[in-house]
Image (cartoon, rainbow, N blue to C red; front, side):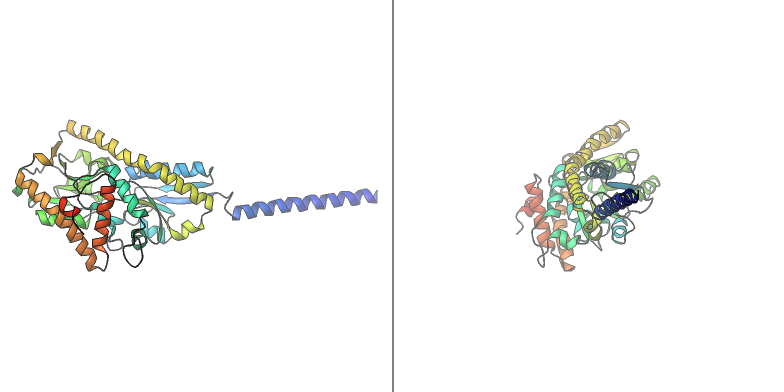
Length: 371
């Protein structure tokens, strides 16, 4: 009897030890990041309908969740619910959010070389611009002090390239450019310093404000129009306001990326990091293609509502000359602006030129001969 009780007690002790050991192993596995659920706060100041969110960020998050079998989950905030444009980058670095769409062009004081994608071009499209932007972020070309472009501009971030916008056009609520005098004095919202440089050269008055504030200002007649991507109109409702659009001349591509702080990135398990990088590769081109599809629909809709789309080549020759002359000058002025800040402006624009051409785009002849 006593022996039986002893055996029973021994069995219970051994069983309890095995259970505790299993729990300890599971806890250790969770700490290693193999099983624990990781919830990340993802945010943008853009609307939920914006192409970068709905067709790049959302598919990326969904794919990451799939690839990690639900190990990673996202808590999402859009339309300025948690962070406003252009504060996403700062919010990542101070830990308010974990992942975001970063719009560096809106912060030239912090990211002065980000505007390079806004340089006007002889030829490009969404796919060309997007591939060139991705190549720039991933380039191993040293621009200064042994550092690449990404190292000089975004060293505090883990960068996941997403597509640029479609090429920028000029759109107005009613103003047309039939003569040079029509151009001069026109007020346009300028999304970057490059557009401010260009506008000054052709006599256009610059208005600076984030895109999210434009609709109300345009509705009040505060200014005439904007440099903007047709495909991006629907993110803000501009298709209801613009009635004249100049096409056939490229005013650059606005860029963005999905970003995390390096600190947050380094804290993630390797399998999660690999899933995020794989997801980014998978959504990159479909995200660019969405801008093309949106553009086609918006052009048709806008025409039906009375909008006009005028090809640059049909304008009065004096107007064409005015616009064209400013392109090369803008490239050189932008490079000089960066050089005055101690940055490798000339090397940067040469690298961007080469990447555009390598990916199927084109630049004016004067820039091709730049050494």
